[in-house]
Length: 505
Image 1: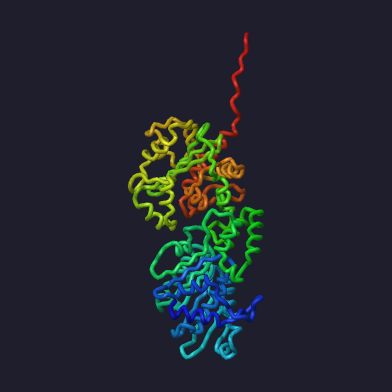
Image 2: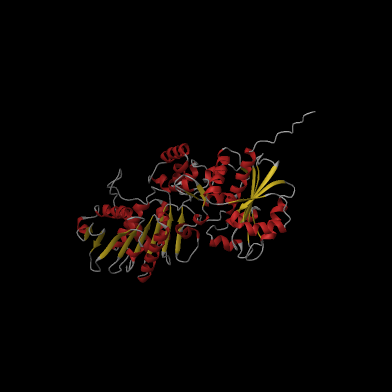
């Protein structure tokens, strides 16, 4: 623990709780809060990142650190400038009000040196021999931070800032900090995906960055007690919701399902899921209901769904047996760059390497996946099966059609569009089959990741289509699965052919 960290913790413990049932009592730091201060204020650290569930004292901790910097509790810099940035001006003001509340608990002589302004903008000014020192609240508008020279920036709920404006504000703040060797504290609940900028801060090891994330392992039930405590480390220390309340909220979220369950996972369990499931192809919980240790056999007709990636991206093939509901899916990457390098670029760590070890993901070719060889491998995997249809995106008709012909394919090929006409039907048939429990798969990291990142666009009439442009991860396996399952559903819905009738003259 550095001297700066020790001074920061001493200052926070000197404050009094401004409101609530503990109002007037000294502030106590929970171990995870003390751990974050030690890490964020260590030597050589310029950026401290903390991810924890909602209600675990993030705003209180941020406000206390902002006030300590303003009053010079550990810094003797002249004309210190502290910026609290949030998604909207209203949210920034909430964090600002926490600071103002702490100020009201300070000794009168200290308060006499502080000026609180609400017009024309929310500011707090502290005057001493090195001042004036200013604390301001900003919203996610990058232009509002240009020209500043802050010594401390707090990026409140960074995981929920709009992408374009959020990146602009973050860049403006970080470049401003570099002018005065300042520090950034990025504190938030989890973002909705691994590709969000806040997730990248947490996942990528970078010099000068301290990372602390309280997120349970994926795939656990929403009401799993141990994982609730992981995401809510303040529960043991009287900070935020009690364990009984978390259990009750989990039971309610499970009962309501849909977007209520997604929001509970995102905010209370600190998981990386889409908050609003109207834009999700399938929720993670829906997909996990398809995974089983008792996978049905490969019997009856087989449908193959193909999703050909770009020149250097993933291609995927899914095999679906409609009569038994068995589903298998495999992805393929080019050999270069390596799976380790791709994992770092896509911010998924060693996930691709795990998929490779589990034989869910393969590599083929060098910089691109050779289409003919890939198609030959797809057909070879189903050589003993009764393949009744191969379904692919109409947009890739030329490339896939030529490759299928060269590979000697004899199965019927069905071309589907990804717009609202074909896409809406395929999305609905996939969802209906999953909800009815008619899709069964072995545990698949490939499909878990794909469905967690897959989103759909909805038109005013309520029709959905897959939206690759809005997806932030590798969703190719989800698309190939949708094509295969939807065609399998159409096969099952067709009436069985009647036996021929004979008449005798």
